[in-house]
Image (cartoon, rainbow, N blue to C red; front, top):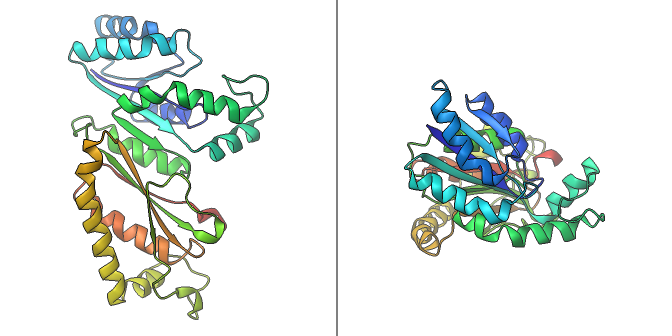
Length: 285
């Protein structure tokens, strides 16, 4: 039996993740009290042989969540079950915006101070996040990006102990990527914005991509970024890091950063098992 436990920050996309896993053939149950996790798996495995993939949503609203989740997960692992713990995260600014849009109180701060609730929850979940098999930061994700990420890790035959890499393009004029671990500035490359016929296109187009990648210095820059990732990847893993966010920034986040981020994705996914890609400022194009 394959089991995915989906947990993480409230507002980071757990319900959406469960919907995606359901579409992938998982039997899904949301907001299960953590103290019932072990018992539920035992009952499901004994009484229904047709259920071979289960996804469970656990969040801080569940009774006894913090007291029991680590114990319950350890019990399942001790039984040798094929278990993955997926932690969904997002930066504070994104979480506040999502709560404001939904006009819902935060479960840890019903008084209305959403940011205070987020900070309390982040502190409470710190150890659970550290012990999770995968951490996906959904700050800049569309549903399609989250689906792609989950489809990658839902293949439980892969090495779940490997650190994930998320590549995010962005524009400095729209604000720096707050949740990046590493930021690479590609504004030193020729800018397609000033080329007739390219200004209105973006880095996903063949024309802009070919323009940006045609320069010798572009190839050298990409090579140096890849060399640094290859050098630092294992060192980050040794320090217990389970996700690495690479920010690729240009002026507007439309041309150079997008083309470079896509090229890095193509290169890194050939070597590393979990590489994800998103474009933060795509909505502004």
